[in-house]
Image (cartoon, rainbow, N blue to C red; front, side, top):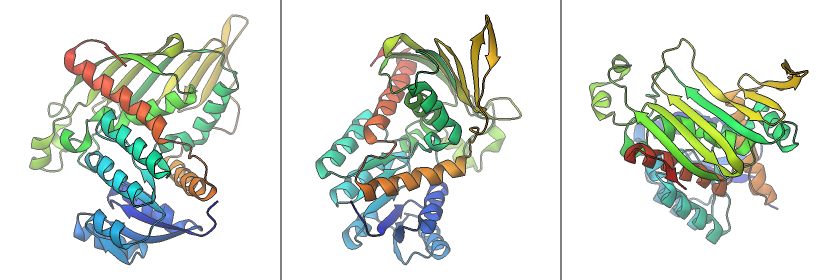
Length: 347
């Protein structure tokens, strides 16, 4: 068991990196010793805002010159494999943001590097740490929903996430699936106890710039946009479980929605907002317990980071392991493959 304060470095100081820097700075068992970003102006601002003295524009220089126990990787997905493998090889534990990698091949290399180095690899699927998500997992694990039979999963956003280059496939790995829907895919698989995906069929579309074309932050961003922003999929899971997935960045609604409805042999579990319905005398009845409706995003990020710190200090696995995230990556790859060839893909 590690007893001293963890020396932490954050690589990537953009929108997501700011969350990590904030949480690590405030954690009582962490010393934030270094950060890195290819943008020197953004890097300098992060150093000043978070009181970090060791600043690097190349992650290799950081790993070569600063002893660290845990590296938090908040770069774009096209660098996740490279930086993760380097950090693990340098002897650091790793928390890598989602999506895990550009494809399952890269994700598998990350998992193998963690095994070879005997270091922790955690992935930033923080939705598991929402209070209602924790309840949903316990509810299903305890058998109170019965046998899972069908999941309707959705993430329907009315706007494109321009805060990073999520719209450039060579950098992001994909659009609404890779950037957004993988969160809810990870959540539903975890809630159900990780049944193995068997087959997947998907249709994907790019509605931009006909839809939301006027929201592009620059002509360059508008021209570079080459990803899907609408997805409809059917997924078959082990045990005869069926799942549908809808995802969009151009959903015409005043309020964005994300969540799932999980049908079991003994009722229905809805996430965000949380609800539990069971059959009584042939009719559905609301039996939702009180006090478990927390779906707070910042709080879930904080809890996820706290879990990784505690896992490293205690020598135990984190809640979100590399192996579990690899399953999400494999499923994501199959959905992209299906959309490309126009038929179902077996995993």
